[in-house]
Length: 273
Image (cartoon, rainbow, N blue to C red; front, side, top):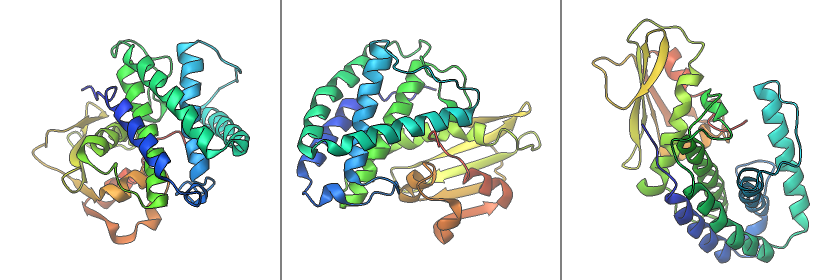
């Protein structure tokens, strides 16, 4: 199964520029669902994504060589990088941020378009439990980053645009790749199946099935499902990006069948956090 997002990246960037150019001066200071960041901070972080990819991957330049001995070490390092950049960008105007996005966005998209999707990526998708990933999966992960942060801006300024089948479905389809890793320590009998349904016409159903002492993600329904989890798209993107936690969603999620298996789904975090 390949999730092909490379041709969506320039479309997503086009929508970002249109969004940023529509913001009022007040909009740039609105609080986003990312608790430490206002809208301007999120825009700065999106710029960092572009520049970091072009510098590190395209130009093979790394300013630092940190010692990473664990997943938590990697998360801490990335959080520090993100915080340093956002702090430095506070002195940069919104107008100049937009200009920099216009320059770096197309270069970012061109770089990923140049890659063979089946080649090994420089960086693995760690939240999916992989130590080696294909380029297509790394690019899909980058798509989720771009989608997520633009959606955070849109929600903060009350401007819709990304909750569509074209843009949302590849995002959530990629996020679901984290399900097997989320269940890695959960033991169940052979054939145990969990159905995760993101509701409405922009969602879909995924099935996590216990096979040969591991968990396998599929889209074909098994004969029997032991637990079913139904989540709305608006809750799903926040929950699985750790913007909200399971205890905050109340009755917005419906779990039928095995409650423990269903609750385990809610712990999935498909970002480096």
